[in-house]
Image (tube, rainbow, N blue to C red):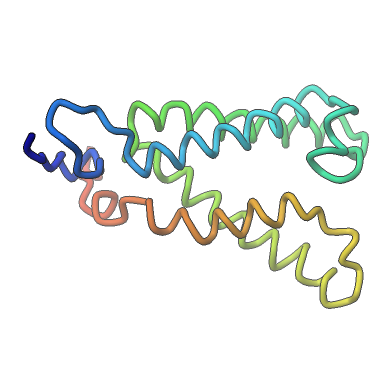
Length: 152
């Protein structure tokens, strides 16, 4: 049973021939889907029972803000689902998440931690942000993205 190397454009890992392994990039999409789905549905639909579980408190009631945020999370969710089929092409959504989660930690969580208001910072979201910041840079196909033909 020989090993085969998949094309760099697909960024799949090495696997036994004949097998159809899920790449680390696709695993990142699956994990992101598992996080994005409840967040998107909670913010978009305003589920008051699930909001405290995800966010530690209920969401402020602003239909405009809630629907914009829920729509954004739904777009991230759909892009991650597409990423299962087109891992490299959809990987910029992972870059977007690195940027916004780093900003959230720096602009929201850190100031509260430093001022002794740790209880205001949802621990589950902090853990997800930190795991994302540690993992996503390693699975994003930077070289494949840099060498994509952008002329079309």
